[in-house]
Image (cartoon, rainbow, N blue to C red; front, side, top):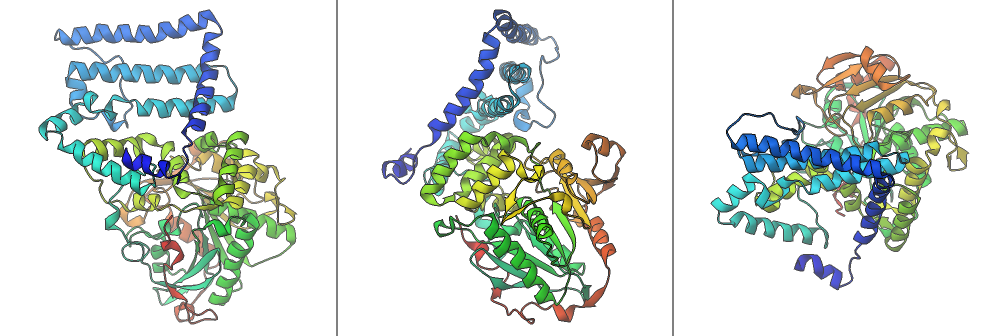
Length: 569
């Protein structure tokens, strides 16, 4: 409590809970109003819930009498909250679990069946899911059999350890809870993360450009320039040696350049999309071409880095400039935000206006706020298991590189973030062909070059349906690949691990479900498929001796991964 109150008493942070709760109450109130407006509907809703409870009561009595009965309701197959055997064997905990599931399912059905506008329904579905996740009996000591056993066995020492970690995590969050998802002490950028050899060969106030050292005698003549998202740090593409996309690429004969975005402070508040395009993407293109002594290059964009890449290509087409792009690869990239998923819950005129007012004060959006939003998309995987494990069981989380990266968030310049939210998520202007950037109207249909696009089947940030729809806006939809797993694991999937799968088929057209029905499934990683596609564009090789970082026109500034990526928020 002291850790929570101190920064508030000192005026260092301001609570924003009231605004969030007001929106939740207003949204769920719209659902309640629908059901209460008609007495018959009200009775129907009440009867449905009470009927479920009566069925459960009957089932519980039979179970107490020694009779075998089928559960009235069961958790989803992938729901790990109720994996402890006592949730099934103990009549009390079994009844408690089923009562919770009945109530949560009933609440979800009330939202689904309410005849209200689509946006309000989407928000209500999200909020009800968050509330249901929070009040699960698995999250409390007295209603979780495993926690109860642990607490009694250790005489409460688990809770003492947990409260100590809770205080530490509130301190680490500057007065707000920053849930630890991994053991941060086990990871150090540049030591056991982002260790692929290379040099920073260029930098300005927005980015550093890294050129990685070749690891083969010859390399593909056309280099690869990667534009990662600025919402997170680039080293998700260069994690441990075993998981590094960058290391795999250079080991397979590619010359790789990587943009490392700055972690901006208030002094960069006015930097917008035009600045990021010109001083970031376009500058990286020109520096990479000169450093590699190549007139052509392949561009790769990941997530919002891919959205920026698409905007850049459309802007180049509008200006008639030809920078020498041989191909473009998009990884989990949205350009049409019609089906952008649960992130749209946080984005309407009122919420963006409120966010803009807050960003005016600080000049940036704090990275932890974006990280919290991403975590809420999968709260039952990324929030509540860690609350239970850390603060109630009193156990430190295991070291996990991806979750360390996930918590290593970056700030976002006010102007850049506002432009992105308004023009993409709120108004969807890029897909409509009405977005103005640097004096030009962007037309995605004018982009006509070889393209390779990857979506992931379980993506909560860039849903596959959204990526698939967006590809149909381009002049050339190119090759579409659907990978297994989610936004990170589906992309960072080294072939050596033999995990997941990917699907290939015809070009992106029609509905995703129809495309999947006709697609061919391949086990393992999509990386080799991409490499073969890239080499098919132009397989010419050159001596790797010509691609040593720092020995060309740009001298080495420092070793990879550079200093920008090490700046903490």
